[in-house]
Image (cartoon, rainbow, N blue to C red):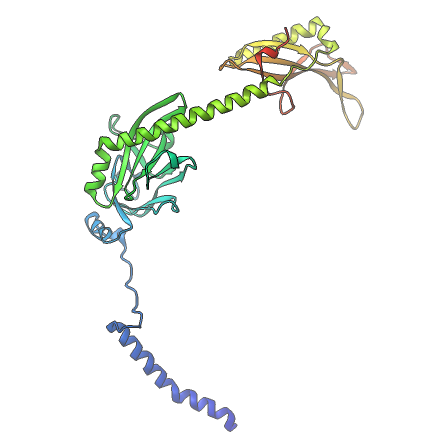
Amino acid sequence: MSRLLFLPLLLFFFYQPAEAQLMNRLKNKAKAGVAGVKAQPKAPEDVKKLSVEERRALYAKNENYQVVVGNLRFPAKDGRAESEVAGAAFAAKMPNANSIDLAAPLEQEDLIKFVSFPETKDWVGAGEQFYSIVEMSCFIYDQEAQKSYNPGQYQKAGRMLQMADGSWIVYVVQMQSAREFGPVEMVAAGAKTEAKAQELFKAQSSIDKAEAVEAKIRAYMAAEEAKQLEARRQAAAKVQVPKKGAMDKNSDLRALSKKYLTELCEKDGTPLLYFHLESNDWTPYMNQLTSKPFYRWCKGAFVQKNKDGSCMLHGFTLKQRYVGGKYHTEIEFGGVIQGQVPYGSYISCDNIPK
C-alpha cells in the first residue's frame, strides 16, 4: 500500500475515538441541561389515552386551548354512545385559521369550519370577529325535541361570533330571505375557563349581542335584495316580445300552441299571459347523409306570470315528423327554448303586446 493512501486511513482510525468521545460529552451536557446545547424534546402525550379530567389539566397549561360547552354532540364512534361536548377544544387563531379542532373528550376532530364575511367590520364591536359556519362535524342537540340534528338537516344558518378576549359563541338562526328571519338559538360557547364558557352560553347578553348582529344582517340583505330587484326591473324594461310571424295567422297552430302552453304553465303554477308564433314558415331538419328531413319545426314566444308577480319571456317550438315520404298529420310540442336571448329573460309586464 502506498504511504500516501495509508496516512489518511491511519488518521481516520486515530481520530474516530476522540470524535466519539466528544459526541458523548455533548450528549451528557444535553441531558444535564447545559446552556447552549438543545436537549432532546419530550415525546408528546397521547391525549386519546388520557381521561377527560387529565386532558383538561393538560390543556389548561396551554394558552391555545379553550373549554367548549353547549348543545353539540359527536356521532357515535368505536362503539361509544353519542357524547356531549364537555371537554376542551383548540381555540382557532383568528382570522387566519378556519376551523376549531376538537381535542376532548374524544379524539381530535375538525369540529367547525367557518368563513368570514367581508362586510362584517360594521356589524360587530371593536376587536370582535363574525363568521359564517360552512361545516360542522358534530350534531346540534335540540333540547326541546330531545333529538340531535345534522346541521345540514337543521335548515338554519350557523354563525360564530368571537369576542375581543378570544372567547366565542356559536348560534343558529332561521334565514330564508331578508323578510324571513327566525330567533337566535344558542348552540355553544368557548372560553379559557369552563366558568367563562358557561357564562357566555347562558347569558342573555350573548343572545342580545347575536340579535344585534342579525338585525344588521337583515338590513344588509334587504338592501342587497332591493338592489337586485331594481337591476332586474331596469333590465326587464328593455326586453321586448319578438315580432309575430306569418304562421301566427294559422288558427289551428294557435289553438294547438295555446293548449300545450297552458298545460305547461299551469303545471308550474305560472299562468300563461300571452303567446304568438314567430316563424313565417316551417324549417326542415335534414338528415345529413340522405338529405331527407327528419322533421320540420317552427317557433314562437310566450310570457308567463311568475309566483312573485314578475313576468318572464320564453320561446317554444312545434314539431312535425317526416314519416313514409311525407309529414305526419300530428304536430308535437317541441319544448321550451332555453339559452337564447331574449328567451328566459324577465320582461316588464307593461311590455306585453295588447
